[in-house]
Amino acid sequence: MTSEQLVGELPADVVSGDDDTGDDADEFTRSAEAWLKENVPARYRDHRGALSNEETDEIRRNWDRQLHQGGFAGLGLPREWGGQGLGLREEVAFHVLAGKAKAPDGFGRVAKVLVAPMLITSGTEEQKAKYLPKILSGDEVWCQGFSEPSAGSDLAGVKTRAVKVDGGYLITGRKTWTSFAQHADYCFLLAQTDPAAPRYKNLGMFLVDMKQPGVSISDIKQISGAIHFAEVAFTKVFVSDGDIVGEPGDGWSVAMRILTDERGGTETAARYVEIRSDVDLLLESCGDRPELASELQELDIRTELLRWQLSKVVDLEDDMGDAFQRAVSILKVLWSELWQDVTRVGIKAMVAADREHWRYQYFESRAVSIYSGTNEIQRNIISERVLGLPR
Ligand SMILES: Cc1cc2nc3c(=O)[nH]c(=O)nc-3n(C[C@H](O)[C@H](O)[C@H](O)COP(=O)(O)OP(=O)(O)OC[C@H]3O[C@@H](n4cnc5c(N)ncnc54)[C@H](O)[C@@H]3O)c2cc1C
Image (cartoon, rainbow, N blue to C red):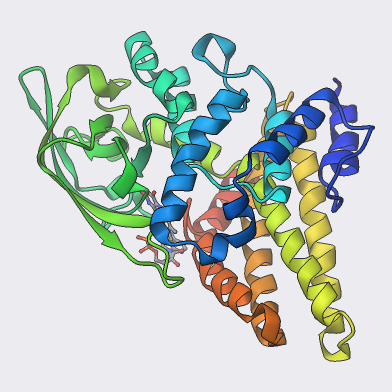
């Protein structure tokens, strides 16, 4: 399939407001759509706001296993490592269809989007063989241990220490805002291997078993009431020499590659569906209110611009050069700020029947301009690295 077909096809079939993509859809789209129809848990699809944290967690955990059994885990990962060997177009298409089908978000997302590509690019053969099969099958959950109480935007300033001992390292330090830590079997974390080495050369990337003594996890409740993340203390936690990715001073460069994956196209696809559906709800419930008319029109247009930008990223996948990086870099800022504006109007519109929906969406959307690197930091990156502006 050529890139012209992809960009033309993405908006026309997959990224449309229709519930069904119809007879013109390609084979992948048709099989994904049929599988989702059969497999999305009805309880989650119809009652997701009313389920307890425990029930939601159970559904999310099972969802990773269902994806694997259905042949939809690791769509973009190479076949030799258990992936499906497909491209960004199929990944984006699946996320869009899953969003439309109201599918759960599995706990495996961190591992599939971040850890698997990291291991394929920078891991040893032993690490790939040990970790990739259980990432794809959904049997092992991973969390990301980057942020610390005094190192977030300034990620290079992490204080967690990795002290060399016989056969490995002892990790000591505190990580925070660690999504899914309560459920995780492993954490990939940044720690200082040599405090005397220059900045950016003093970090290692470690694969840490979370189920061993010395790991202590405290829940953090979010403003929406959900508990998605935690603070994690590591006290002399052992990691073997075989579980460092790259060389001891390589952690920063490995981390930078991961962050590009984190801010990329697939999450935007899922978010586009959520934003489109929120905008449609606003148009249905208050499209006839003149005082909201210009705001609603603007939100509608910005949502379509997001779809266009997403299609552009897919179109540029084969290129993977500067133009692709430019297109990807603005996606996170675009969708996060748009969604916050949509939920703000949702709250302002005060439609009684949708009050609970907007309350939840408004609180959840507060976080999106912060995680994966704040929008201020993302704007710094766009201005310095993409536009070449002076610091
Ligand atoms: C829902 C959620 C899930 C998360 N999950 C994870 C996870 O799984 N693993 C993980 O490691 N982290 C996670 N994080 C943490 C997230 O990556 C950090 O919150 C983020 O990087 C910001 O760091 P900070 O909170 O320390 O804020 P700070 O770095 O202290 O920033 C505070 C403010 O100052 C601004 N600022 C800082 N430096 C600059 C600058 N140079 N130029 C302009 N403005 C600047 C920031 O934009 C921000 O507004 C999560 C966060 C959230 C909200």
